[in-house]
Image 1: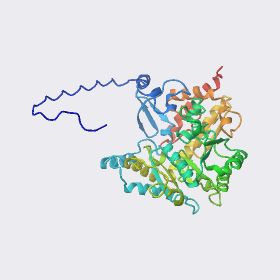
Image 2: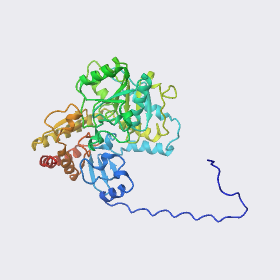
Image 3: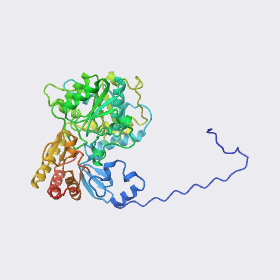
Image 4: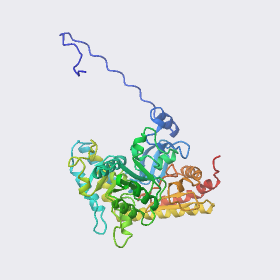
Length: 473
């Protein structure tokens, strides 16, 4: 089909210009959260752009936020809440930190994007390389910036297959690595919230290339590699699980993952999209390495990052050795590209956030997390509610069970029905928690003592609500 215009040639006779179409009248601004949700459902599937936001796990009306500052978010009704979601992790400094906002505004004033390289991309890569270093071990020699955590993990898997010439991938039940086709089996987080084992639209052939095994189970790990090791390109794992609630690896488990993968010629991919730069300047890998007097006990081949690396804007990355990373185009045969990769505004936010995230910030994050997790546990215990507090650095969550979970099956077996009334009691008291029992709680350095005290004051009523909950029939 030709792209040539079908407009007749100029006949020399002027033709009156058509009157511009009238713009549709703008809909009136929604005054309440419910009105906002109703309006959204008219144009967005389920009224949301990410499933957990729909409050399907806890019920009730989702809050529609219009402003955030420090430790607070404000909804369309003008009500403010202490935020323990913090944009699912990146707001470690608190919302709208003045220096981050200033960096973003300056970058935006220079241009929203160029479709070309910028010096700031190199600065961010150098900063990440310097931070992911413990005991003289610096595993990131090259970094590729992308736009989302899903894109980072998807690219890491493609890279593992390209590096090994193999097709199979191993993952753990309950670990979430984004919504690309091969990674949705037993993925925890939003899928667990919606009670979905996978996703329609993923072909059987694609699903068959991912082998799912039980988390924290060394025997299962050994068996899958014994049976399929010759065809396994890589194993991807959350450095500490944070999408089935928080569930840290058993001592030595990450080390075992890397060792077994390498024994069979496979790559180990550590997903630090949630934990990276949040639980430690060097992520969970750094936290674990510092806990060992001898330095790092395990070094994955590839890391994936998101959330904090973009300071709240869409930015993510994957990194590793030059030998593996330079298999990516344009140097190697593994293709990846993105018009918005390394977007200058997002890079500016990431640079400002990481530069401000100093020892004092991490100290405050750890202190707030320890206080809130301990006080919440005490409130639940006072009401006789069975629970276990789960920690991975300053990430924490609660499992409504008498015994410590080790894997996704244990997490799913909890008395999860107790979370919804707990959640809504806290929301009524002005505290916004993650709207799912399968999510981590996120604190920020902006949560000062006064804010922490307000959260603590809300806990007894929430614990009573959890205690009074009845199991669904």
